[in-house]
Structure formats: structure tokens, C-alpha cells
Image 1 (tube, helix red, strand yellow):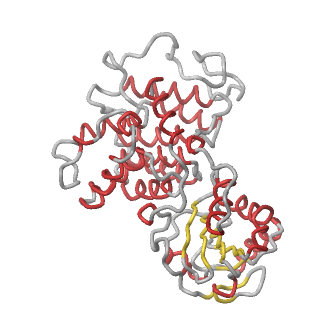
Image 2 (tube, rainbow, N blue to C red):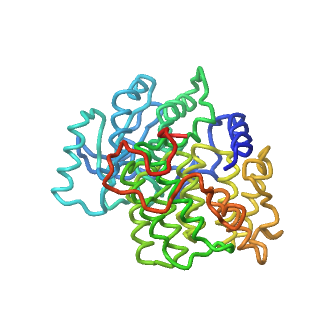
Image 3 (cartoon, one colour):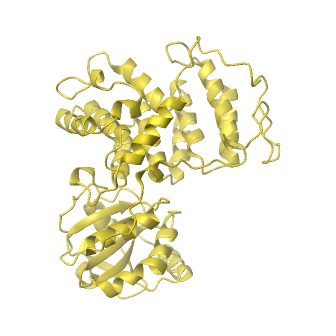
Length: 418
């Protein structure tokens, strides 16, 4: 992304205000909307006696945290609830952790859940969702997910994952429900802060991306796998497993090269990582659209909308996904929301309207333009001048994988980050 577009986007993001509550159309659950009443289902006790959902509610309501032992973010949100959120109990809110590890739980798996509860020192009730009945009926998409209920078990809000801003967002949403005015609202700009890669992972990613772009034809196709590019992306992953970009670009390269088996392996590698920051979800949504994985893209944008209600990229992605499934009304709704966002064209970097027909479906012959738009959003545009790479950073030989983690790749600038 060039500096002018980056500056414009930063300015727009700084102007967006944090709003509560969100509309049901941008809700983080598949099965229920805000205002829906959750069935008074029965739970099996783990750290305390089980019982109906209503038996755990406080005078004002109940905060339900769906979690799993295999979710790396779950311990963080549970520990945060134990240490920071229980102050709300004196204001009438109670807390309940619902484990959703598996549909059928063996004795060993139940023991593993109890071990996590003991290790975290949780003192609020922890229960099992037997058969994942509640998980499926409510429509939980991401683990962990924090659901806010009033004392009649109606859904007030739902917050997926535990990104960096959750430590402000979750208390803020409880405050809003209880009528407590926040002293300082969270600035929207911080939602889009990207993870800062470590150990020169960004440089290896950039080298891999440049080799990939050099290997693409003018029409954007790949005749084979550019192994040198993939090697650099693998090295970026090795140096910083929490950097999402090399996982995604690797899957895109293998998709373009029609290496289906390796593509699926790369997608599984990506799926194992719990990328939950707003910027990560946004870019992953674009990537899934690029790969034709529209359902996964929709989930990313739905979860993103629970944090950021008026991002042009999210609304554009929602419109594309809806148009591809021939849902004209849903696409038109997303496009209408996009049209109301000031500076949307500058933030996107292109004019989106010609991509869509009046019905909301994709315009005839728009696939090439859509691919170019996604290239831009993913920052993998073909360079001008026939795809020639500048010669100020030699790339002839792949950097050795065995170099110390602190060493920069050949041809990289001196600093670890730009």
C-alpha cells in the first residue's frame, strides 16, 4: 500500500467512533441476534454444581464465556474474567464459563478441562455444554466467545475471541449494559494495528512476496510453484509463527499454481493459528475471498463487525461474499452501508460500484476487476513495468534457513522493521 493510501486510511480510521450496541446485522453469532432469548438449557457441572442457565444469572444478568482447552486464547479471557471482571458481581452480573471442547467428552478430556480450571484458579462456575447443544443453537463461530445476557436470558451482545483490544472492549460493553459511562472511549485506529513481526520475519515475507510477484504473468497467473518464494515465506513463519501474512500468501501462491494438495496443507496450517486481531481478520477475509472460500470469508467479516462496525473493507467483503452466493438483497444491504461511510473509496483504493449490478450481484465480466481489487487490498499487486523487481536488493540465492534468528536475510535493510 503506498504512503498516500496508507495516510488516507489512517485518517479515516481515526475518525470512526466506537459505538455500542451493534446492530443485529453485524452480530458475532450465527444462530441468534441481539435481543434473542437463549433457551434455559441444562449444563453439566465441572468446578461447581450444574443446572439450568437461569440458575447462574445475577440480578442484572450473566456473562457467559464459551471456551475450549485447545484454544490458545481461552486461558487469557478466563484469567481476565477471574482477575478483572468479577468486580461487576457486586453490580448484579454473574459469570459462567462453558467448555465446548468436543461433542462427546471422554473421562480424560474432562480431566483436562478440570486441570485448566485448577491451573487458572477459577472461582466462578465452569460447566460443560453436553453434546454442544448450546454452542450449535446459539451459533458460536469463534472460541473463545463472550456472550452478555440480561437477567431474562436475552442476548445483549457477543464478543468473539480475545484480541488485544478485548481488555478494553469487554468491560466497556458491560459498562454500557449497566449504564456506566466510560471515562475514555477506545480509539478506532488501534483496532487496525498490525502485529509487529519478529526476527526479520517481515523482511523474509517481503522477499518472498517480491519473488512471487516476479513469477506471475501479466494476467496474474502462475505456471508453476515459485519455490524460492515459498521457501522465504516458510522462513518467515519459522522466525515468527504469530505473523499471519506468510501463511496466507503461501496458500494464495499454491492456489494460483493449482497445487491443490499443498494448498490444503497450507490452509490447515493457517487454520491452526488463532489470528483474532481486527486487522488479521480483515485481511484473512480478503484472502478467503481470493481463494474462493466465501463461507470462511463471511465468518471473518462477521467476527470483525463485532469489533468495528463501519470499516469499508469489511462492508466490501460482505457484499462480494453475498453477491457470489446470489443473495442480491444482502449484497445491496452491505453496499448501502458502504456508501454511507465517508472516505470509503480512498480507504479501499478503488471504485467498487462498477463491480456490482443493480440487483446486487456481481456485474458480468467483473471477475478480473475483482481479482485486481483483492490484489490491492491484500497488497500483492503486480508491480508496474512488466513485473520487474528493482535491483537494489539481490535475490538470486535463497537465504539459508539455518542462519541465526537474529540475522537479517541477504539483501535486507539494516533494521528489523520498517
